[in-house]
Length: 223
Length: 61
Image 1: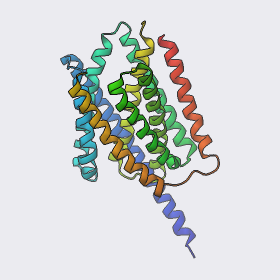
Image 2 (image 1 turned 90 degrees about the vertical axis):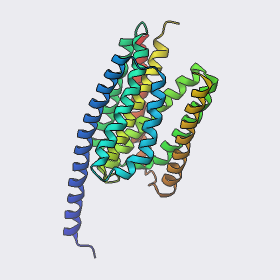
Image 3 (image 1 turned 135 degrees about the vertical axis):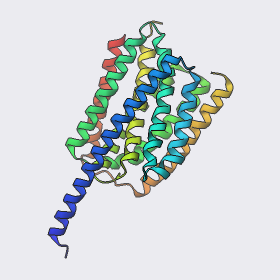
Image 4 (image 1 turned 120 degrees about the horizontal axis):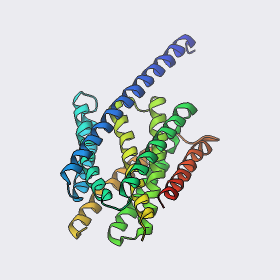
């Protein structure tokens, strides 16, 4: 028969551990977002070309798949996550330079920034307060990512604005689902490494911001 | 975007599809299944996100 005292203690310890992971994740997330913003400002002041975005995304993707999982359990992981988010910030800066040149570019950027903040804070607050386990969404979310990426690959060659809007809309909804999924995994002990948790949440925020920027850029243009 | 860049972007996204496929298989086989009321709890905030995006679009138009 299970010892009830042990299970209470074990439950309390697991809650303390989850809270520690959550606190460390949000601290590292704030630092990486700030670093990314700094790198984006540097990229904008240097007026880096738009192809820099593609280079930075591919570089960050390769590091995220091959380097980060191997270093996430050591202090080197902190350096790697800053390298990844700094690289993505550089790429983001080159995109923002393009949007700043649009007639209503600064307004579109500010709206996308505010929208991303609202979505992240709202969904994180919901996942934290509802205490539900959203990890049942895993299969659905990864299937959705595959569909959206296949559509995005097709649109690289087809260049259809309607498909581009649909892909961006799909990414916003999927990344919103991933915020619920990732946050509930941290709370429920599914993710115990705060560096990997930060990487997941950072990518959700980054993708929502880029997709919102694209939707608002297309819908906000006069032609 | 020139053809070379298009091919590079498509290859990078193709790699992501491959990784998403592996993650999908893993979550389908080992992931927890939804219980009663789980999907309603997830769809409600996602519908609010969709509403917010529509509102933001209306603001910039």
